[in-house]
Image 1 (tube, one colour):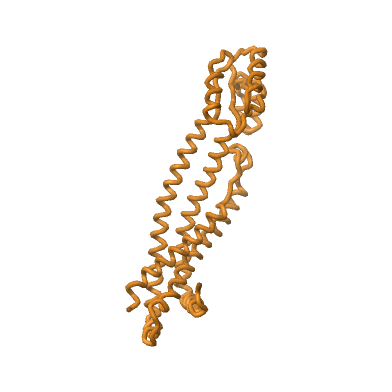
Image 2 (cartoon, helix red, strand yellow):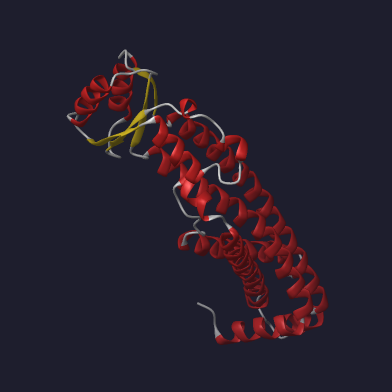
Length: 294
């Protein structure tokens, strides 16, 4: 716990050197913005991955000329399967209509496609908790039926997105290392410069018998505040940018991916602030090790 004397001296030091500390906080905010933006992208990609991994649907595309009796029999068989809650028949004309409503507004070349270009299908609703092995077994059996042309479970898109998320996580880790180094360098340089500007004050304190800990504590508090304020500023800037981008995001795009964009979770934001404070304090303590005489 900070003593009143330490807090007062740290506050006075920051007010006295406010330009120096403001520049340091700005530099740290820029570094944390880069890290926060990367985390924001990874978090939203992860949400989309989870949503697509449990989309709860499969499309059974039917061959051209499939008899309606065979389609009805297949539909009834699907509805009797466990964890299958629905199997809706979509004709070629219905598929073209739905595609036109969502995708081809203002695109005359796509709107002119004939009905035959859109295959009929059975849109199957499955339980999100259905094991992948069970779904793969059902798909394999469906593909063997003479009335079925193909089955799409969107698993390939989920796997591609998972690889993209893993790449984003790796990039975020590398970026975090760069941010850590930047925080240590910026805070360390700022504290060394602040100490040089206040060397007379430090010398007087040492002459009257002040311990190294007593001299260092305000500088460590200042470094910790710099890191925390830099992270808070970065989160605030990211929040403003997120609101602006989300306001311009097409609602149809959000409907297409199935999720709405989400901001950094509270525990990530708190973690960034705590990390900034810890790195700031560490950098300040390390920079003072050789500059305060024993």
